[in-house]
Image (cartoon, rainbow over all chains, first blue to last red; front, side, top):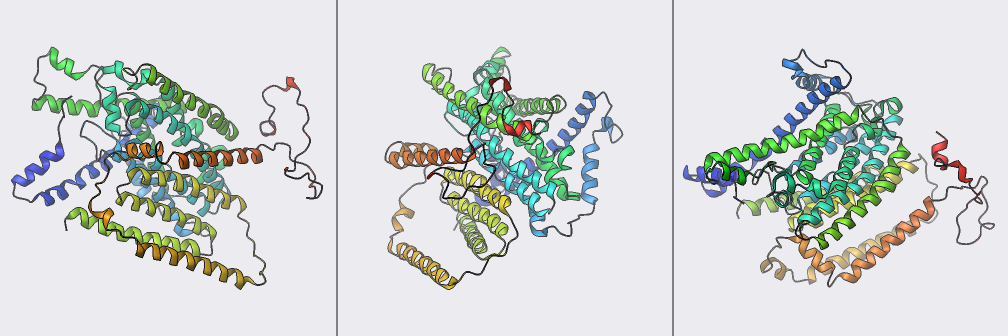
Length: 372
Length: 210
């Protein structure tokens, strides 16, 4: 396996050649990937909102947004601008401090979790050792913000929505963690880089989806529930609760909830592609391709092609999952709260445990195929 | 002092301030909901301190368990019983407050003596930070800390069984019986009716009452 491009190393070396000391060069590098990822995550939200509108329209045989830009591609930007300029209202009887703090607590962990999403061998902010576990623990902070929003709005619908959101996200965190744990057991590491490395080498045949089909379904159901997508969007069920915990919110505070939900959706899709679909891996191993075409594997052009292909593959796989989520939204009706909790605790949890046991058994029996 | 050390000192100071401030808020604020939310802030600051000590797995576990589970549970409990109610003045309240102050002061002095007596120099110099903390933790759990680890799991199992016993009472009695009539070590429960087998899947009372 070639090490790939190390942008950080090259950037620091270039600055040092210009005469800057090592420390200053490193400080100059530090904010760059963070800003890039924040911009990328925000752009991802805009694209997802546009896709959601277009695919929903197609599912209902409408045209969807079409006047703002070509094919209505600027519709999401227009929506965002509208939210920025709307009046920021805090209800008179609401608790102003908690009311303001709640959207921040919901948005913050969603963006912070992008820390561990790799787009290539060295294309991530930080290869922390606890990787995927960091995402699971960060995603458990958001329910506190949701409950804060529900409580501080001083509205019965909001409080019910907040309580539902919290109940839902704690119950579905367990099967989600169990599904991730089975993958982690196979790759012997929590780091997202190692998880992708373990799947690479055999192209499409090496991806975890063939070894963890139950895990993938489990993960995706639990991820949909965590992001409150439609089969599980009880916290904001329109017919029952107006809009749940965001009933009283308007302007950019509502916008933050909106952004957080889409960031979470894209993040879950990215992690599904990393955990089960080989991340930045191309369906055919690129070393084989370079062998056929007799290209030098360490050449700069090949490296650049590999890196951009990696980013494209990660995004393609992630947006496949986003597409799946949008189709599911218009296919599956909303479940009731008792059905939701029954599904989580009595069906997904036992299946998650069985999947874990099965993975452990297969790992002992076939160590070559299940990462012994 | 290089950049990393400076960042560490500044973040240690900020985390310490946040933790002490939030902890004082938990104790001193009158509104119990504020106290519960500030408790989450205390837990987050503690996990930040763990991060500064190179214990990344413990920090993430702290966030997952204390913020994501314990604090949410406390909030749930508050939301379910949040009744506006003034408490009756308790006679001899100063005795309780005095006893609490005594216990707190004793604990504080004990910890203070411990901090002053321990020689901290050995831990700062020689020991290198572990690279793969999860592996190290796992090895400790299954060798020298096996007994506490297993005891903790037994404790959790007991709590789980207790919670299920309380939650599974589907047959709540219609009239409240006095504690004298209730047989000892049981919870009030109506005698169970044998359910007809032909009732099928929708036998639970919640789903039929929709």
